[in-house]
Image (cartoon, rainbow, N blue to C red; front, side):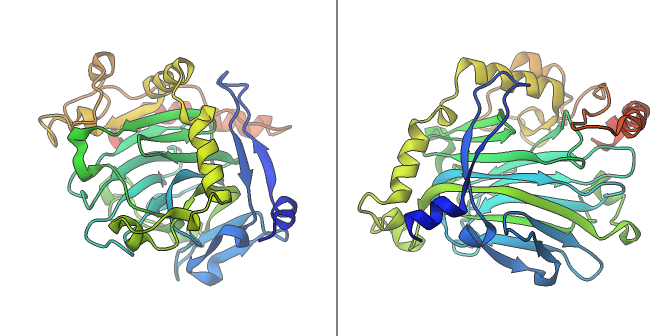
Length: 358
C-alpha cells in the first residue's frame, strides 16, 4: 500500500494515562481490511461503515473470529474491546497470537481470554503463554478488571520482544514474562498470527462448566476497534525459523523501521513507574496465579518471580484466600447515574460470593 494511502487510512491513537499516571502509549491504528481477514463464522462478523470497528457474534449456529493477514515475528498487537453484557456464562472472547496452524506440534501462543459469567458476577480476564508446544505447562493468571468492560471500550495489548512478553490493560502493564535460559523453548520464539474470536466454552469457562451458555441472552456481541499491528512481518515463517529468512522481506522496509522504533520506545522499557503500577494492579485485581499453585507445580516454573507479599495472599491452589472487595465498576461518559448505582449495588452484593467462582 502506498505511503499516502496508509496515512489516509490510519489514525494515531493516544491511550489515556490520566488514571494510572503513566506515559501514554502511541499506537497507529488501521482499518480491518488493512491487516485482517475473516476466519470463521463469516455471517456473524459485522463491520462498521468506515471499516474501523468489527463486531463478532456468538449465536446458536456458530461463533466467529478474524485473523491477521500476515504472521509476525515480534511486535505490539493491540485492540480496544467491548465485551457482551448481561448473562454471559460459558462465553469466551479471545484476543491472542498463535502459530498452531503452521507449527502444529510445537506451537507458540500468547493469550488474552475473557471469561463470561452469570448475571451479577464480573467478567474475568486470563492471560496465558505457551512456547514450542509446552501446553502441558499452563501459565495462567486471572484478574478482575477495575472497570465494567461491557459499557465502553478498553485497550488490551500484547508486547512481544526477543527479551520479554508484557500484557497491558489500557496503558498499565499487568504481567511481564522475561526470557531466561532456564525457560528453554517455553518462551515463544516463532512467527505468529493475531486472532480474535468469540465462542462457546460451556465445558470449562464458568465455574468449571457448571454454568453453560444460555442462548436466550444471545446473540453475544464482542466489538473490536482501534486495531493495531506493529511488527516484523514473516512472509515465509518456516524458512525464517530454519534460519534462511528475514522478516518484512529485509532491506530496511517499513516493518523493520517500526519494530526498531518499538524496541527503542518507552513501551518496551519496564520503568520503575510501570513496575509499581503493575504491582498495584496485581495486588488489587489478580485472583489466580500459576506461580502460587503449588498443587500443580510444587516447584515454581523458572520464569516465576515469587513475591512474598503476593504469596501470602494465595492458597496452595493459586487462588485468593479471600474474595476481593471493591466498589462497583467505574462508568465513563454522561448520564447513566441510576444504572451505575444499580451496577455498584449488584457488585457489592455479589462480592461476598465471588470466591466460589474464582
